[in-house]
Image 1 (cartoon, protein in one colour):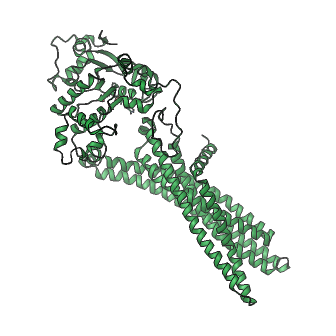
Image 2: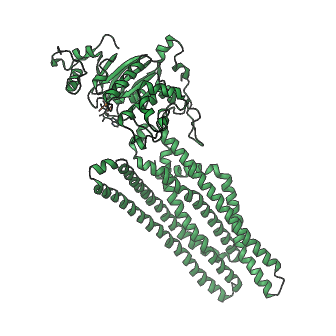
Length: 631
Ligand SMILES: Nc1ncnc2c1ncn2[C@@H]1O[C@H](COP(=O)(O)OP(=O)(O)OP(=O)(O)O)[C@@H](O)[C@H]1O
């Protein structure tokens, strides 16, 4: 994007932010005009009072007019400030609503690419700046421009030659100020970036404060954060210096105007081509011009600094939401949300994902990766031509060396990632054609670190299914062997879990995360390393629950501990992004070298894994095997 296009984009964005308030802004403009009129008329009214005193005319009417002008000016001023404040608050709210919506709907990759603290700074601090910049700044600029124009017209009527000379001086210095103002926007944008980096560094340090303490890294972290803060400080100084340069740029014009008026006006006075009263009035209005020029420059500086924030917010609002994110999402659109996405003609009806009869049940519960290739970086595939069909029921385990792409497979089934080639199919349909919320309701994913949110246990368990009844919650607690533990807690299900689950153990946190997903009654359940944080009792309870679930739906488990998957209906071995073998434990342990290696590694640590004594020769290392039972 060229600079001109970027500027146009910025102005268009500003216009869109202000558009909903055009009526209020128009009213504020009218009030601004009336206020300007009332202010400009005050010297004339004072003149009338003075004249009335001079010729001993009754003072009542001139005084009443003057009082009315004062009152009007003050009243209109107050209402004007309120209206502008309203617009400012509205613009902040709208930009925050749009930002929050965009950020939550943005593809996951956007969150991984952007620093979280910086996103936070944009959503909180940059939006706040819009209040002053777009509402107060622009309206002050408008009123100042009115005052300047009004005064200039009167000066033009008094003496066109002097007015022309003053205009010439002010235009030249105005052009210089405009240049400085543009520079101000650039340095402010730099400062906002540095503030974002500081926010990001703080956020990361606070999130890892326990690790920092245990690593005795407080001083190092303080130095790192201090460096960021100093960098923002340097940016602040650049802004202050550029801001300060605006005033001399305009002052030179004002002073030159006075000089020219005194010299030319004085000369014309002496030749008699200009009368003393006109010259005095002209000078008076030239003084009158000073105040709007100064407030106008201040407003210009504020607007330019605000435009830097508009730019930062705008780049987030430009993010494309996850494809078809709005399809089928009901009641989730915020005020002035981004355009809804129209479902493609072939989009299956959500009911097609349910299981009305046995035939369609099999079809509806089939999940397929069809020649899928995917990489987080386009040229570095993590999964290479992977094909896998799952469903309608059964426990399928995904095993393989660390980094072989197991978690990535789960992310593809839930469309956290889009394949670079190949298709993900659900119930025979391209997953891209399904409403995203419906897909994620049917395919439930328990993430690797089993996150819980700040709130109570009940809120956490019902987070994915907020309409679930208490009975359904209790049933899930029973299935995961959580009920006894919950009943012992002082507030039962209403016990807070603490920020990020700090108040509960890893095993409990994991079971709560599993319970949350089971409550959705998904068609496919994905578990990433479920069991890794569980003690033996908890693991047995979870495993029994998972086995039980696998009778009703397909459960795909990524597990490092083979003990929990040796009885899986199918084990899929992934290595370097490719499926090299699949079958039962007994089949794989005899035929696949990678699987044998994984089993061997766990022999010492896990006595529950049963290994046949007649392991084949490791020379079969590169052979790929496949059970006749499976695809
Ligand atoms: N968000 C990401 N951005 C970039 N690369 C990633 C991302 N997530 C995973 N990777 C990389 O992709 C590869 C596969 O990761 P993945 O987590 O799918 O493997 P895994 O088999 O589940 O590993 P583990 O058993 O250690 O959890 C790894 O090289 C990993 O570094």
